Length: 94
Image (cartoon, rainbow, N blue to C red; front, side, top):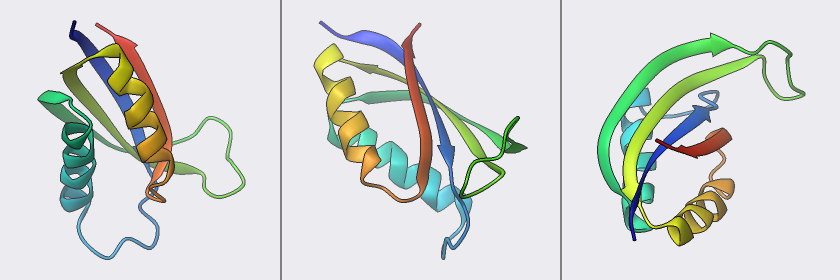
């Protein structure tokens, strides 16, 4: 049973060799590899955090709209935790 999800992912763009668009599309491919069907990708740009973390003071915000099974969300979170470019990730149903 698939559900519609919205995933807000904050990317750490420090030290990235390629462009931000390449990074956003590679994250989308990782979502699709875990069974998600991407519907829309909204790049919201670089924003400052309200409270700076130890590693940075902001990041590039990207909003992914996709359809996936609830079990796939856990797999997506585990996979993106291993990606150094992903600083924060949050998912909710739409």
